[in-house]
Length: 324
Image 1 (cartoon, rainbow, N blue to C red):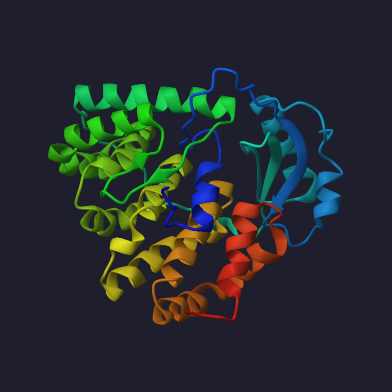
Image 2 (cartoon, one colour):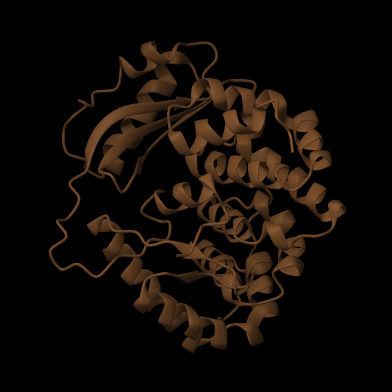
């Protein structure tokens, strides 16, 4: 049986947002998941309590989940005005067990730098049609599988992202044949294409492009991309291959690039960043010490304030005294 080498991260990666990867077991009798609202994740607040914030959000826990971006935008605006925040971002996260959380990210006045990013690129890079077609097929399937609540394990022991599920594995192996000649084009798209969807797609396709350590080094400046989806996919790509990074200098460079994501007003940023740092810390004591020196206060804030297991738990784990 395959054992996930990512430990806690494996569970979290399989149970993230609908936009993350998921696979299913063959079970036509599997009942679709019915998501319900169960709680609020409130982060970034310092001047106002969590209880005071959620008191003014008209969402009843226990009711069925519904994607309602119009309402979320209105709640964001109302909270920003009521408490004189610089900005508020309301979104949602769903897990495969049917639990949904409303995520409220507060940007207090004085913390405007948390939503400052590198300038969006303005160029155009055409990705190969056969690669994009294979990508659409795989991730269209992923979307439907997530809705069934039946994820499959991911693995990367062959140097590319693969799955236990036979059908997904076949698709992954096809991508592993198609993508490698286009690695430089993917990196160029991440750096230069104006379309965030093209950049995010290219970030995920790096999983099948080969030469993963060199790709990681190249994409580090783009962990500051203005698109949260691009940042999510770039960091998620790296999570699968940290054990292949042998250079201590490269590990420290990754740490420096990832740390700002801990404070971004986005569950995806926090989740990927805390798992990246936790996994890098497990490589050696020097890296762990470097992480805590640079970001212990940010990690402790997450450990103390997040209620979501795939943010809170790895943060607490990272703060434990029993360093490697």
